[in-house]
Amino acid sequence: MNIKHHPDDATILAYAAGAVTEGFSLVLAAHMESCHHCRSRMAEANALGGELLSEMQPAAMSASGLEDVWSRIDSGPDKEFPVATPHAPVDGVPGILIPYLPDGIDSLHWRSLVPGIRQHVINGVESGRGSVRLLSIAPGTTIPHHTHLGGELTLVIKGAYTDEMGCFQCGDLTDLDASVSHQPVAESGEPCICLIATDDRLLFSGVFSRMLQPLIGI
Image: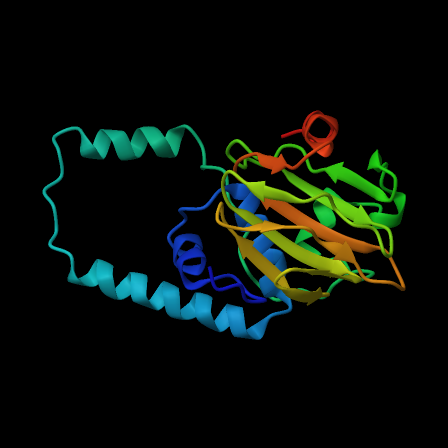
């Protein structure tokens, strides 16, 4: 898999089509607040979707089609997923995350997983069999080696980390799948804080498997 510091094309297209989890939408929207390049890619994906729709042959409406539409309107709006728009960050936190962190990152009640690694789960965000969480990694701390049963989007909010694929700094986003196995290490200087969404479980190697699997909540 070709790892970049931005989401890959397939993820952008799926996001534009509304075909990713709410958790992935949140991470992508947070990244695009400060990434003009990816906002442009998103606009292109939306334009492509519009062209494809315009070329489709119209389908006949079923006899109950109009009743179904009114029924959905009467039942209230569907849950809205986060949308990528430029926002000014607050204390380095993407604007779209503020409703989930009303008092800021510094006031969060972090849960310690192992020495040097803490997490805060963002509840109420649909993410398949995975989760959405903030991870705080102390400078120089290594995250145990692991792989993924599904997809994982990681946005660096503060600090930086390095793994087998390169160095990822504030604003960078990694788009990983089950083919990736890695062991991130937080850079020195300040804690590395990441917003992470997964749509399935992580698999840790060795002694950390039984220790971290229940703690990380997936």
